[in-house]
Image: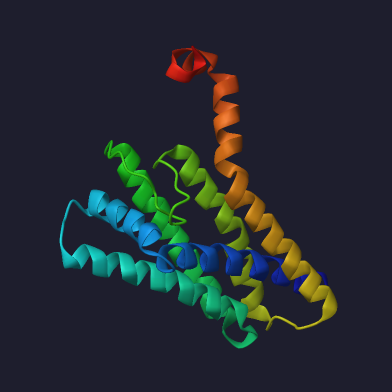
Amino acid sequence: MTAGLVLAFTQGAVVFVFGYAGYTKLHNGEGFGNFVRTVRMLTKRDGRSVTALAAAFAATEAVAAVLTALPATAFAGFALATALLTLFIGVVLRAVRGRVFAECGCFGGHSAAMSYPLILRNVLLLGFAVPGLLLSAARVPGVSAPAGIAAAAGLGTAFALVRYYDTVVRLVLLRLFPEVRASRPEAS
C-alpha cells in the first residue's frame, strides 16, 4: 500500500511539472516565444529549425505528462520525464560552463537564468521521476481515494517547488552574500 501511495504522489508531481511546462509554452505566443529565444541562444542557430525544435520539446513535455497520468502508460511517462530532466540538466550545465547567458524558458513566461540552482531544481524534480520510474516498473498505479489524495499531495508539492524555488534561492543567496544586495541599484 505504501509503495502505491508513493507512486501516486510521484505521478501527481510529474504530471504537474510536465503538464505545466508544456502548457505554459504552448498556450500562448509569449510563453512559446520565450522558449524559442532560449533554444536560439543555446543552439546559436536561427530560423524555422529552432522553432520546430522548441515546439518538439514543448510537445514532448506534454506527452510525458499525459503518459504519466494514465496508469497503463505511467512507466513510459516516467521514463520520458527522467530522460528529459537528465537532458535538461546536461543542457543547463553546458550553458553555465560555457558562460552562455540565457533564461531557461522552462515554464513559458515564468523563467529563471541558467545557473547552478537551476541544475539543483532539476535534480530535485528527478527526485519525483526516478522513484516513479522504479515503482511503476513493478506495478501499475492504482486508482483509489488514498491514491488520489497522494497524487494531489504530489501535485501540490511540485507546484510549491516550481512556484517558490527561485524566490527561496534568491533569499538564500542574498543572505549568504549580502554584498550582492548592497551592490544592487534598488538597494540604494
